[in-house]
Length: 137
Image (cartoon, rainbow, N blue to C red; front, side, top):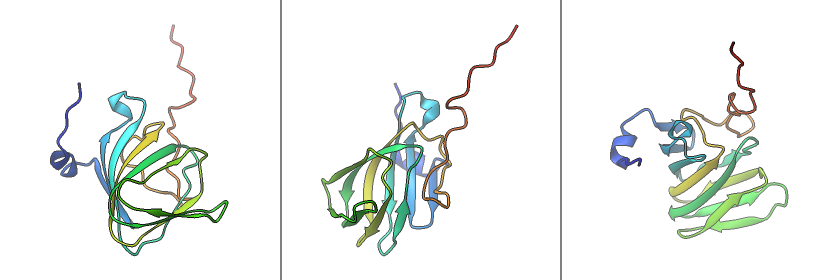
């Protein structure tokens, strides 16, 4: 069983800040759950371009308001408490928080903990995925 207190994790290196957002990573790859779980705040007035090429993500908005735009279709969706969106096809998207948005996020495969978005708006692939185990004599 894994039990963690949000206030303790926020004081650790599992609390990651980057331009436009901060994320408290409560479960990570090393926890062995097969997914990672984060509480993330996206800051009001930002325009967050993201394209998770190596991960699938589901997000539940807990507080705040804004929009998310699907860059393939141009369709805009309102974000508000109780709205869930899932990036089930590595969707290129932009989140535009009108107020700070607090959300719960799940990533598959799990992140390792210190990831921030690269120039494409993605987290890097886990270098351990897809590697064959080393054979020993």
